[in-house]
Amino acid sequence: MTETKTSTDTPTEAALAEAKAKAGDIVTCDACPVLCRIRPGKTGACDRYGNVAGALVRMDPLVITQRAIEKDGKLVPFMGQDWDGSVLSGATTFVTGIGAGTTYPDYKPAPFIVSSAIDGVDMVTVVTEGIFSYCGLKVKIDTDRYVGPEQAAVRVKGEQVGHVTTAEYGSQMLSLGGVRHLTGGSKKEGTVTCETLLTLCNKGAVEMTIDGGATVLVQAGKAPVINGAHEERMRVGCGSATIGMFARQWFGHADEVIVVDDHITGVLTEHQAGRFLDMKPAGIRVRGRKSTPGRYFQVANPGTGWGGTDITEPLDIIEKIDPKTAWPGLRLLMVSTTGEHAGWYVLDENLVPRPAEMPAPILKVVDRIGENCEPALCTVLFMAGAGGSLRAGVTENPVKLTRSVRASLTRVTSGGAPVYVWPGGGITYMVDVTTMLDRSFGYVPTPAIVGPLEFTLRLDDYAAMGGHMDNVRKLVEVAADGRVAMSAWPRENPWPLQPPPARSAAE
Ligand code: SF4
Image 1: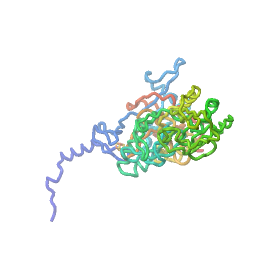
Image 2: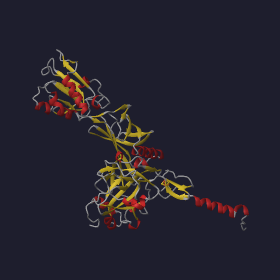
Image 3: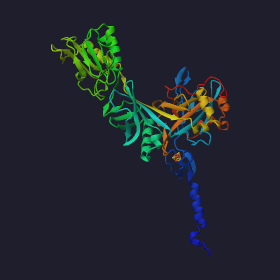
Image 4: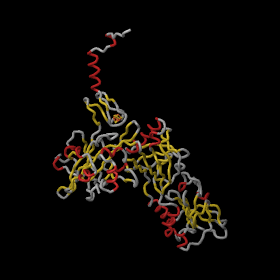
């Protein structure tokens, strides 16, 4: 039997025209693998791209920074001056990757490849936003307080977003993000990890809990808040270092000083510093494992008490007082590595330490410990690998970009901020988010973090490495684009357009 189509299952001419018109209004964003189909007047899943009158548009402006220029012998900010494209040069103007857009997976040249001249040298900056599934944060929390055991899970909204790593000198390190949490766990784990990274990268605060440890509020450039307590001081050094620094100032005013520290507790008269001063042994033995004379490990458990221990009563770390060596009237100072905790004791006739009023010369040194402590801060370093397909947006022969970076012919910056490029393979870099402009980072829901990147090198080196020369645009052309936002250059950052030494990338 032959099937006959009726008018009800055949679209009318008008319906076809309407469907075609509607389809024509939708634009497909190809800036990341999500490939959002965006209706007119709407934005895609990440809000970075939108459909404006049928065109795919990066919704945030491209950020161009300008540094102060010299005028009449004075430095004046360029911002606010009459706009004169003719004076734009690499000496004052730098195009950042913030708002540049992405070309993932880089089957086309980077969105902006900008030429400029500086000191008579033609330079080029390849400007893009990288989409990083392989990225994470290294977080340094200046504190002596115990935040949790090494390797413990760090959680946000119950999801693991990272782990505790090593304790460094006066700081606790966390590793957050990474491809395993972004893509290797549940969808919720990936989403929460991405949100956490994005908030911290954009200098926001995130509260996180550590399994078997503390609740920590982290924000780049701000003091950490641990179990609700604002950390104020980063310790002056370990207990042993504190003894070394202040031994001379205690000498003659105290007979023994014990600096309580979770890592290395120092005992002055046993310590090399006390011996150097010919101090008489005091016969006070502290708990824990003796490492070297006057230096003791594990005098207590880690905690939020004195010197990062769980000690709230300092005399608890005294194991014994030797009656053959100690004497009635012996003057004992117990102090923490920040000077926040201190107690003064005098041994009675039974050699029991009795609290007493702290003498002024001792108080002065305790205060000096505090004075020498730096403010406790959180440091957030964004770390990502730019050595993958992103390089194809720079050159048709990607390995030449890596070699050029290795040879210091290409300078890598992130939103104009200086980065540290790791030795070894790839272009794996770290950047301190506090050196970047506000809201430099974005995200895509794959999930991944979007971060600005710029590669700056001599134009002739760029040509030699197989750069996309047909896509090079002059600085004035880019600056004249209506989609730009001007921003003042952060003066603390080195100027990225300083030409590197003349050597060919082809060497
Ligand atoms: S998530 Fe954003 S970048 Fe990715 S396709 Fe959608 S709009 Fe484009």
